[in-house]
Amino acid sequence: MLTVLGFAMIATFLVLIMLKKMSPIAALVLIPALFCVVVGQGAQLGDYVIEGVGKLAPTAAMLMFAIVYFGVMIDVGLFDPIVRGILRFCKADPVRVVVGTAVLAAIVSLDGDGSTTFMITVSAMYPLYKRLGMSLVVMTGVAATANGVMNTLPWGGPTARAATALKLDAADIFVPMIPALGVGLLFVFVLAYVLGRRERKRIGYLTLDEVLVPESDTVLVTAGGGKGGDGGRKATGATGDAPEAVTGAGEADGFQGLDPNRATLRPRLYWFNAALTVALLAAMILELLPIPVLFLLGAALALTVNYPKMAEQKERIAAHADNVLNVAGMVFAAAVFTGVLTGTGMVKHMADWLVGAIPEGMGPHMALVTGVLSLPLTYFMSNDGFYFGVLPVLAEAGAAHGVSPLEIARASLVGQALHMSSPLVPAVYVLVGMAKVEFGDHTRFTVKWAALTSLVVLAAGILFGII
Image 1 (spheres, rainbow, N blue to C red):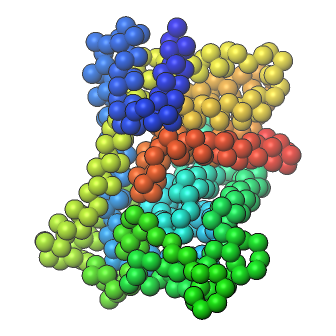
Image 2 (cartoon, helix red, strand yellow):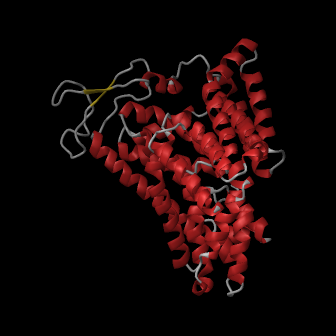
Image 3 (cartoon, rainbow, N blue to C red):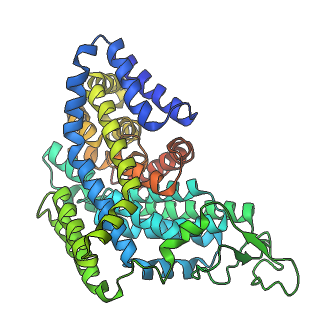
């Protein structure tokens, strides 16, 4: 009964948000509360919620202060050179813009933190997507999928969890998986190219005269349809097709982050801010302090040094308050969902049912089974729930048929490309929030591509004899 209700609760949540019948926050709170009553455990709802909030509170604190920290770094101009470099590469060509998004997300993902990746990627690329009229769900989908593949880094979380759960060395799990993960990342770049071609076909091959000049809210471009002819010509308005103005609500706001004359810039402190960011990321990777504490200290130090006046500090905090409130609210709402899912025993029953449904003849192929199951299981439950609750059971079943725990552990990583778009991943709310994309739209667009990426990683692992 709990198995059916667990799947029904997840399905109800996904359908309602994808059809935009409820906001994610409302759905994350009200649907699990209703199902908690349905299973006859309404009296324990408070305990489940408090337990869920307690587990996710450090994550919420980390996201809050990470948003403030990286928001300040964007304000002071730390990432302006990266933005300019990406924009020069993109040259207003939709194909280059989408591929650039994938490359940037993959590079920034080396720090192992999804929230950091999404904040930097969206801050750099959002203005260009808005100015060119490109689909923002393409940006969020590509960024999330690239980050999902890179999330398998030993310091990213899943690999460490798998190693801990099965008492293995993280390097023994990750290093042999590098070729398969490389194929997965290459697939993401190819996917970005294909999606970019689709965007180019939709809006044309555009040439931007000067994307970094924010004085005018209208940038003149020539839309040549991407089929040759005048498509690559700069828009001068002198001959040929009349230049087409690419404008829209919020585009001027979107370009504020690139304004080379904005009042928040602190060029004299550039190397201090760069050193502070490198030190912060290094301390995070080395686990010198808990990540929430590191970002709290980093945000406080960045504000104090860059904006010594209290009025300026309040202004910067207020400027990022919307993002902080939206993300923190979403995380605590997700705590209700995970708290009920775990507290009522739904997760355990769902996992046991899935494991029990595996035919006896599949025993020698448990690595393949684990890889396939990692897609839905890491999407519908937290990484902690999957790696500490389900993976040991799968490994034990595999061991009975001579399948190495290392193979099971490696196979368990393939679902991470899909996992990063799960409604239970707090970082995804940073992504959709900063990109101003509806979570349902992001889910509907991304899930199929992310699942395909995971299957490509699994196929490569089998082909290379890793899994």
